[in-house]
Amino acid sequence: MTKHIARKRFGQNFLIDQQVIADIVNAVAPAREACVVEIGPGLGALTDPLLKRLDRLHVVEIDRDIVARLKQRYSPDKLIIHEGDALTFDFAALGQSHLHIVGNLPYNISTPLLFHLTRFASQVRDMHFMLQKEVVERMVAEPGTSDFGRLSVMLQYRYVMDWLLDVPPESFEPAPKVNSAVVRLIPRPAEELTAKNEEKFASLVSAAFSQRRKMLRNNLKGILEDSLFDQLEIARTARAEELSVSDYLRIANALG
Image (tube, rainbow, N blue to C red; front, side, top):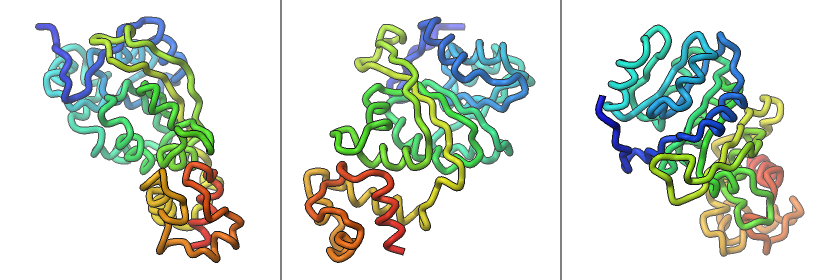
C-alpha cells in the first residue's frame, strides 16, 4: 500500500518510539480476554502489540483511508473496527462493564473527548492516554495553581489520575511542536461521587471558571448568594482556582 500521509485535520501524529510503545502497553497490561478499545489506532503502533496480548481488540477510527488499511491488515475476528468519530461514539453500546480504553489522542479534540468519556466512567476499568503535556498538567493540577481549572475539577472528581511518563516530540512522525505525556485514569467508586446533582455540579464549575481573572463572587452572581459564601466559610474574594474539588461539591450540594 502507498504511504499514509498524516492529516492535520484529524490531528494525526503517529507514535514511532518503540520504548514508549512498550511502556504504554505494559501499563495497560490487559488480560487476554479483556475488552480493550483503542481510540485512533492510526498505523498500528499500539494495535500490533496489544493484539499480541488479546483475543480481540476494538478500535474507533474516523479516517476512512486508515480504516481500509486496518481491514486489509487484520482479521475481523481479531480487530473489531468501529468507523466514526470518537467524540460521538457510544462506548456503552459495546455492552461491557470493565472497559480498558487506550489511545494516542488527537490533540485538537482531547479536552472534549475527555469530557465525552466521563459519561461512560461507570463502565470503564481504566484509561491510558497519550496527550499534550500541557493538558496532563491541567488534569492533575493542584488548587491554587495557574493550571487548576474546569478540566482539573471535573476529572479529579471522577477519576484517580497518575502521570506515567513524558514523551518528546521526536517520538512521533510527524513530530508535533509540543511535548506529550501519558496519563492513567481510574474511575472512582460510586460511593465517592457525592454530588447530589451532577449536572448542577458541572454547571457550577463551568460558571466559576468562566472568567478566571474575576472573583468567584462575580462569576457566581445570581447563582450563589453572599450569605451562602459565609455559611460555607468560603471567602467572597476567592478566585475559582483557589477552591478545591470538595469545595465545589459543598457549594453544588448546598444549592440543592
